[in-house]
Image: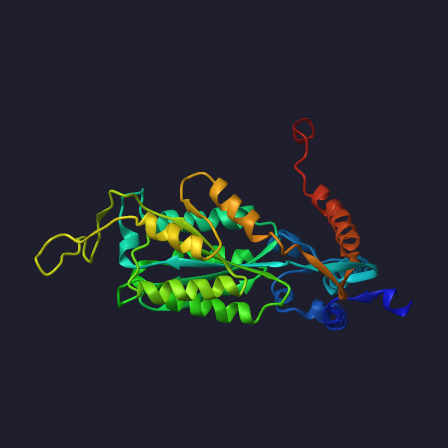
Length: 345
């Protein structure tokens, strides 16, 4: 079939072959006018090699080198153009599960009751999630405090989320407070743009110190559960808690000048997870927790293929030309090798 015949991925590189013509013209002109060069006025032709340390190439040598350069240039330009022929069609598979991570970045997540801090531990959990995900689940990320921000929409490219993680910090928000309700609304809008057959899940990573109206929050989570959205929760922190860091290395204080402390509210998080038809887990250094959440998120949402979504994988052939260039250059390097010590003596 014509589509499977020889063609180039980037044919514009072939325009580089036109450079051979001006180089050949310059070489011809330099041969004609080389004998009237200025330096010839100050020394005889047979003395010039001793004066300049080089000699004038004979016409045959010039053209031989030009032909060799033109051959190498042609091979490189054709290789850059990407010659290819014949292909195989690959069936595209669409992940059947969507998991949006709701990351709490309020000031209480800076508490160091888990080392080095709750927020750092939370980001490590997301790293584990990405490392264990093998394209089965599409991931999205929403960071929230008093306001929720979509950091990454639901995507197959988990590396995008990995690249953004180091920049996420509690200093990104000016108004402090942890309002989960707005983050749930943002997640719901992300799910609305996904295929209907997909399994939708939420992963909340927080210490449970929310400023929402509890009754309204529970009603919101129940509504999501009725819509088939599961809520899984990773609790970060300890029951003992610790003081909440402020600015300039100080800790936050209340109106009575007492240190503001934050503790992990496991009971509240467990209740929310139960309302959302999910589970609650305590975040730790091991990856079993994120592995279990990924397994649950894929239940009922296995990957499916589409007959209309097929991609052609072409067999690239440029490497044959690159190999030919390397072999031709190898002879040049051989000429410049130092002579053996015995011959030098």
